[in-house]
Structure formats: structure tokens, C-alpha cells
Amino acid sequence: MSLPGLPGITMQEKDFAESDALLKEIEAFLCAVKNGTSPIVDGEDGRRALEVALQISRRLGGMLAG
Image 1: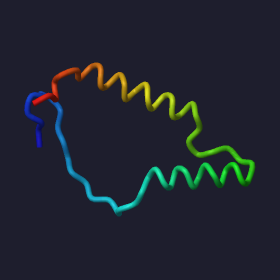
Image 2: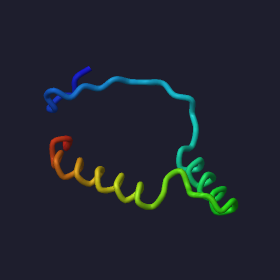
Image 3: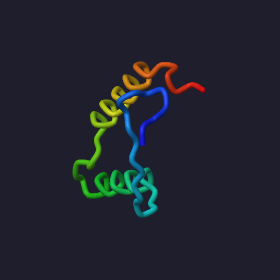
Image 4: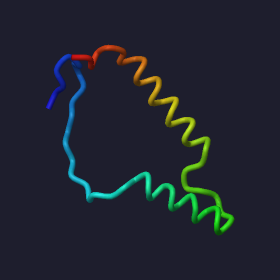
């Protein structure tokens, strides 16, 4: 399915088992703290993910606005 107003971008719906990703990430972090191990997702990973999200938002600008 193509998205109106966004040429060349398509969307495909997928079904996934319902779960709380944030809860799982917090639980994994607490486990890492408890066990003295490195977390699966560290602060640097979070910073990079935020930067990518901000870049996407800036590049899309008002394209998705009604």
C-alpha cells in the first residue's frame, strides 16, 4: 500500500504478539544493574535512536500534516 503524498514510500502491515517494549527494556536494564552486566540497549544506543528520529522528523517536515 502506498502512502498518499509520500511518493515511493510504501506501508506493509504486520501482526506481532502484544507486549510492552518499554517494560521489557526497563526490566532488562534493572537486570543488568543487579547483575553488574552491560544493558542490551545503552545510553549511546538511545542517543543514536533519538538523533535518527529527529532527523526523520525534520526531513518530513509538514509532509504528514493533514
